[in-house]
Length: 230
Image (cartoon, rainbow, N blue to C red; front, top):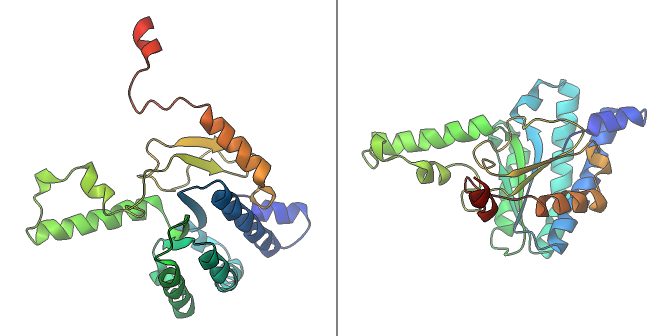
């Protein structure tokens, strides 16, 4: 969800106004996902690298996170949405950690959309924490190093209970992954748009889905047409 700061600058406002507008876009995207019966939607809200921003902006983002969770959790629960926060939440304040715990617990048995919010998350951290779990099993004698395979790592990274990611959408005109779900998006389709996140609406989401529907997903295989022409 990229472009909040630039959106605010274009409006001649402080960056926090862009983040506040971004929350509205989140609400719209979640509603779109529910209507279209998505199984899961993952939003990259705060990366591990975002701590390098100014103390003022980080503090404002943390407060916005608390307020948004507090305001939205009842609505999420009402619509049968299961909320998951993925990332290293131990760096957050006690107040936010407790709110995350209560929000996840409240919605844990919901059977609708799984909404993953990546907060203090990085793809490299995710892989490392998974490797550490496997290393512990090896140390305890429950796993032999030569037995480790892709399935083992799949089971210990974030979102292990979900299917692999199908589509990654990046807003704001940036053409990179930026340390997002590096393991989970190995075969995902990528869609980039110049639209800044606060302006991301149903029409842009629909465009991304239409582009996805036209992709031919081979997963390393060849099509009958390829076989006939090779």
